[in-house]
Structure formats: structure tokens, C-alpha cells
Image (cartoon, rainbow, N blue to C red; front, top):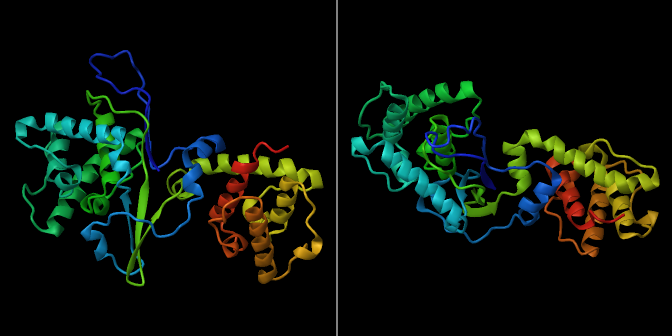
Length: 342
């Protein structure tokens, strides 16, 4: 999920009394498990199966196992997303009106660095040492490199997180372009008003065995990639949830990635949540081998499905191999159903 929250962004000449303008522009926003529940409930548990998404011709040029991110076409129809695009395009055109430059489509008009060069020169009132016209890909990327280095020199001292690069801008990645433009608009106090809480679904296009597959990134993908500072909040919340029930057996969890890896706590937790005793002959209480641990986790997954939950997105082997993201997905799946169980 790509998200934008603007607390206050308005004409600085009209609203000079607003001393602080706060913006959080990220691929996902997450402050607690309750926020994650609201924003990612459906996405987190969505199966990683190929989905029907329109693929652009350039996406077919991927190498084997290469992947590319794109915005779900349905998200592009969201009124707030359309408004964000329009506001930014109108702002660029207003800034560059004397240059007789008219931007109609952000991806197509900004990727080669020409418009970005003119925009930055106008905003920063400085001249960049770059070639005016570049037709080759190498020349375009060299221009972009120079322009983006100048942008970074302006933004980094003010604490901006850089979420774009030469390849993503030149590759017409709309998310990267939007991150860049919003950062510039904020830094230069653009006299515009951005729509609040703009969210779009990101799709990953990957080539495997010569075939293109698409998957929707879920909340945990984006959490790990773009909001690792919020990870501890999620872990603490889930630890509180599981311990509320495991404490009934005088058990306690302090490390999610390790203490659920053998499947024992998962099996016992399911029994506690569904209020039944799990016969000890159905699982290994003290598993010693990898296969025994996989058996336990697989058995816990069966109990979850018997309890009405969807088949976990994670693989049992991933949980056993201490993959934290997979373990969190499983535990969050339990949390969403059993959070009110005493």
C-alpha cells in the first residue's frame, strides 16, 4: 500500500500562521496493530497467486526472476489518486509556464530528466550544469543523475528520506516520481493543497520460467521494506496477544521469530483459542528434526483451517526457517479472528 498523509498543506501566503507542516509519504503507514488491521486486513492474507492485471508492453522485457512494481489499475481510478496527479501536474505547469513547458502525463514527461531539470532550476533559482537536450538513454540517465544529486543536496539536510533513484525515475515508476514531486512541493512550500490519505495498491510483476506473474504486495511486505521502525510496535502487540493465552499454560513468548519455529506453541495456541485439548500424539512436543518441526507447523495450519481461517499465506518451512515475515503473517491471521477471545 502506498500512502500519503498531509496534516496541513496550504498556500503559505494565506496561512502563514501554520508553523509546522507535517507530511508522511510512504509506501505504507502503520502505527499499531489496530492500524494494520484496518489498512491491511484483506491484503495481508491475500494468496500470492497470479492475478489478472493489465501488463504494459515494457513489462514483458523482464529477465528471468526479475521483478518490477506497478500500480494496480483499479487504484488509478481512485478519485483522491486522480486528484493528487492533477494537483501536481497543474503545479508543475504553473511553475514552468514561462518555459512554455506543458506536462500532461508524469511518467512520460518526467522520466528523461528534462522537465525535472527545468523545475528544479526554477524552484531553486539556480542553473544546473547539464546538456539541454539528450536523446540517448545514457545521456538521459546522466542528466537525471545530476538533477537528482542536486535534489538530494537540498532535501537530505532537512531529514527527507530518499525513495527514488535514477533507474526508478527513468523506468517511469510513478510511485517514485510521486515521492519526488511531493518532497519538492513540500520543501519549496508550494502554494497547493494536496488531497489527504491517498492510497494505492502496488502490484509486483515477476518473470518465472519465461512467464509473467503478478502478485499484490501485502502490508508486511511494505512494512519490512519501507517502515522497519514500526516493526517493533507490531511485534510487541502480537507478543501481548499470544502471551495473553499462552500464559494460561504458564508459557511465555519473548521472541516471535524463534519460539514459534518448531510449531509447538502454534499448536498449543490453537487449542487455547478454540478451547480444546490437542492430543499429544498428534504432534511432537519436543521436536528434534527439521521434518518434525515442519510437521508441527503444518498440523497447526490444519487446525487453523478447521477453525475457519484461510490457508496461511506462509509455508510451514518458512516458519521453521525463522522467517519473521512469515511468522508475523500467521500470527496476525490469528489476531484478526481471535483478538476478542478471553
